Amino acid sequence: MALTTNPSSLLCVSLIAIVLYFADSQSFIGVNYGQVADNLPSPDATAGLLKSTTIGKVRLYGADPAIIKALANSGIGIVIGAANGDIPSLASNPNSATQWVNSNVLPYYPASNITLITVGNEVMTSGDNGLISQLLPAIQNVQNALNSVSLGGIKVSTVHSMAVLTQSDPPSSGSFDPALQDTLKQLLEFQKDNKSPFTINPYPFFAYQSDPRSETLAFCLFQPNSGRVDSGNGKLYTNMFDAQVDAVHSALGAMGFEEIEIVVAETGWPSRGDNNEIGPSVENAKAYNGNLITHLRSLVGTPLMPAKSIDTYIFGLYDEDLKPGPGSERAFGLYKIDLTVAYDVGLDKSTQKSPSSSPKGRVTPATQWCIPVVGVTDSQLQTNLDYVCSREGIDCKEIQQGGACFEPNTIASHAAYAMNFYYQKFGKNPWNCDFAQTATLTSQNPSYNTCIYPSGST
Image 1 (tube, rainbow, N blue to C red):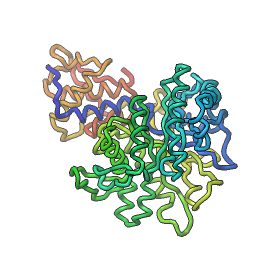
Image 2 (cartoon, rainbow, N blue to C red; image 1 turned 180 degrees about the vertical axis):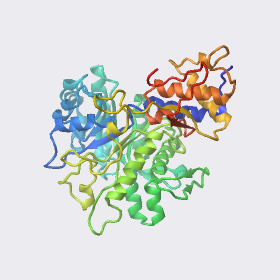
Image 3 (cartoon, one colour; image 1 turned 90 degrees about the vertical axis):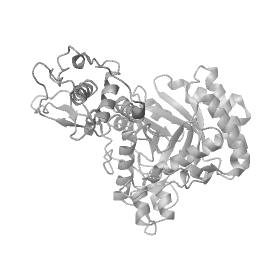
Image 4 (spheres, one colour; image 1 turned 45 degrees about the horizontal axis):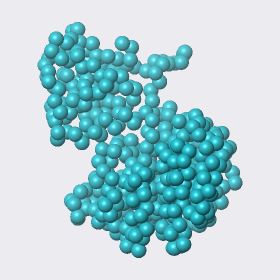
């Protein structure tokens, strides 16, 4: 049987490919580790907590050596930061940048997986023109310092608030503040040349506070809603997160930098706030963060960037009791200081994987096979079949002519065998049997005659 690729199914194939490749590590899910508090667990305890989760990356606002050391050899990616107050010296003196790298990067390399350095936080919208003018030179000096010690693989960027955009609705009309465009253009040219990401802080929470209608809340929380059609391109948006990210993408495209990767440096929802604040609650925080994580794991992407997942750092790891401002500012934590969940959003590794073996005295989970759901079209199954049989390590000889499972010679039969083969080979996690919602698990063995479907025990 010839296995052909249907060009119209490339989007679906890409989605499946990324889901199956990243399902275990979930490297696109990060968390912000803020420390404006006087009651936080030790770095070692926090490192232990993070290792028990599917969080793949951690963003620090500084470069705390105790935290960086605690995360050594964990495989967790680390973003470290240079503060706004560091920018003048980093910009004016390359030796300051060299000293900063020698102090905050070299002592921990390569055991600690530092992947990105952010120079400054929301500088472009700070109103400090002197600081804004020094931002790019500071970034360039840090990158040059990294290059000089052969660490150019560590990228350097800066973090922006959504206020760098003056137009974001509809997303296709996204554009940067004209007053910032000259400086941004120079910064973006550097980022394009160095392949560093554009990092942004979208907060649907604040969008809801400015428009506190029930339909807006559903749109912000990824809950069922009628959606919003982009009048510029006709694309349907079903959540605010995608709309905000795509507005940034459009703004980058309008300046000729569409290829620059977008990273969400902060997003989140508070679990409580002051009496006069609209939106904070445990229910809303759980809905936003839980549905965001589900959305990222689906790798459906955004309407303008389909079939990929934006690296996203959720704010934050713990509540920070010393932060100024309204009560909500001190209530963004996913975890309590006793290391238990503030509310469960499915980040615990134990909830993501079925055990590969059972400890003595426990019942072994029933063997399961992955099969197509009823009603899936042949074209959808052909997409699955093409994808699986093109993967390295997958041997589809049993469904080729002369193979034990060639008969019946139908797309449905061949796809069922291939989809199950993939599920068994690549982790036997529920998401390994999703195939864009065209597959399901069964405890009934689909083997027949001499056609044996692989299982966990074969």
